[in-house]
Image (tube, one colour):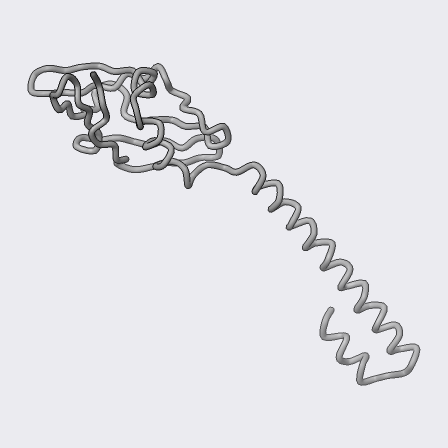
Amino acid sequence: MVTVKMLKPYYIKTDNEYVRIVLAYQYFSVMINEKDYQFIPIEANEFRINRRTQKVENVDAKFAFQNGKDVVYLTLAKLITLPDFLQQLHSIAGSYYIDEDNEVSTEKNIESAIIIDELENWNVRRLIDKALDERDEHAFHELIKYL
């Protein structure tokens, strides 16, 4: 029976596509048949998760764990099947995921802000024209400040 005892990232790297959770000694350990095995970085040393799909990409990576002189290798595919492993992994990487809905709404907010700025600019120009037509010098000078 394999269970995750501790899972803490050494550090986290992100780019446009992936969240990389990098591991080091003493930050990742598992229990195998009631024995404590510590992660050792002789094979793979990171989890790579797609920021958009939230899927673990490097499932064939092999991780080494040591207890004394005994070294055990577990693939990430095996680790994913462990209770609570994915939950812990996603809780670590969750703040780095890209929310596509939020990204679309941000783009719409930017477009809306640009349109509002243009409309306000046109409105000020119309009010300046009106002030000129009415020969309202005070209103003209006040409105010029908004351009």
